[in-house]
Amino acid sequence: MSDTTKDRVIAIIAEQAVLEPGDVSLNQTLEDLGIDSLGLVESIFAIEEGFDITVPFNANDPSDSDFDISSVAAIVKAVESLVAEQHA
Amino acid sequence: MRRVVITGQGTINALGTNVPDTLEAMREGRCGIGELEFQDVERLSIRIGGQIKGYEPEAQFNRQQIALYDRFTQFTLVAAREAISQAGLTFSGDLATRSGVVLGTSGGGMNTLDENYRSVYEDGKNRVHPFVVPKLMNNAAASHVSMEWNLKGPSFTVATACASSNHAMGQAMNMIRTGMSDVMITGGSEAMLCFGGIKAWEGLRVMSRDACRPFSANRNGMVQGEGAAVFVFEEYEHARARGAEILAEVVGFAMTSDASDIVMPSKQGAARAIQGAMKNARLNPEDVCYINAHGTGTAANDKTECAAVADAFGHHANDLMISSTKSMHGHLIGGTGAVELLACIMALREGVIAPTISYEEPDPECALDVVPNVARDVKVDAVLSNAFAFGGLNAVLALRKTA
Image (cartoon, rainbow over all chains, first blue to last red; front, side, top):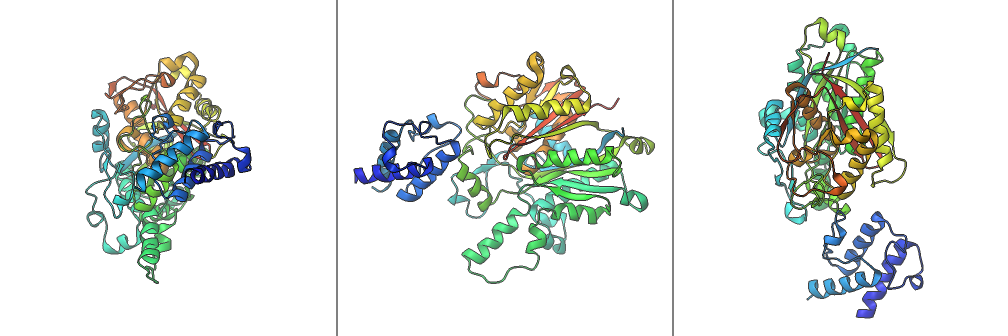
């Protein structure tokens, strides 16, 4: 399950970054990947749709949101916990 | 060059159903933002807005009119009635052909769209009311104003998202200046507070769930409002000859395009519009005492706007006042510049600067005098009104006391 979540999140981010999933690594930031603010809200939308979850995120203050977007690994971890929480 | 003055103003918005009530609310720093009430609101994550509560179409219009008027058209007509009545104009003969109407709106008949999509998609109905198209079209309000008051000159609608009203009023000013018309009914209207309207905005994740706090360090997004404001712009000599009361003079206008991003604002584009409006008005930066800010309460707008003002005004930026009345009436999108012009006229006529309410924490990136929380008594001679739209389209108006 964990690997699958990771792979699916990476696939979503890779699509936004116009990269192959293999070119996205866990320690990269969205900025490293060239994803801007619109790309970010689109990625979050794709994550919500893909995992059938609601992601708490306000573009006005990303750091204040419970959803950590500081790196690809952080996003994967946040999605895993939201899936666990909301599908429990 | 022909001069342009304002001889009538009207409004309906979350702060009041006319100009005196609205200005009183602005003087008192009252908040018109509250819980939204409409069908399916429980399916929204954003549930606050500057909604006009207790509005009854039946008290304003007959049944045939209501069948033809979307909410944004109704608001326009209510505001136009007040403005034209104050101006004391009757449009007939040559004056009718020398007068027109140019209004701003972004969504047009959004409630009509929402209701009818719900009817055909959700309720599965296969028939809609025959007036859906004439109700929802963006120019419906302008056309009904022209019909109601017999305005036969240049008339159209401007849709540039959050700058629609300012663009419309800028056109109205230029049309009178250049001799295309003598009187223009202008301003704007918006009625986007319905399920589909808010659901679309939710998607962008720029809306606040609790309050609109422009320039405050803890601001967390914009809050929508609804309503209209309408003005009578009139050629100066025409107004003087008939002894009309002049509320203010519209002395300048400029518009620019960022040509950069569909949602993120640009400091350069905003600063060029501000400088352009001052140049067009032949105002020096030191002449401007007050700016009604675009001030949406989003992280991006407010800091960019403050940086643009600092660039455009240099050291004088620290001496002027800049407030966002969106904190009280919400963001009326295509109608917002029109409602905000009321605050500009109040500043010039009454020497009262409307505050930025819900202001809680200073933000070093918005280090200007934002007139926090409480209105201020200051005599001012010249003011600007900013509007910066999604799509990077900027429109700034300059007003001054009539000499």
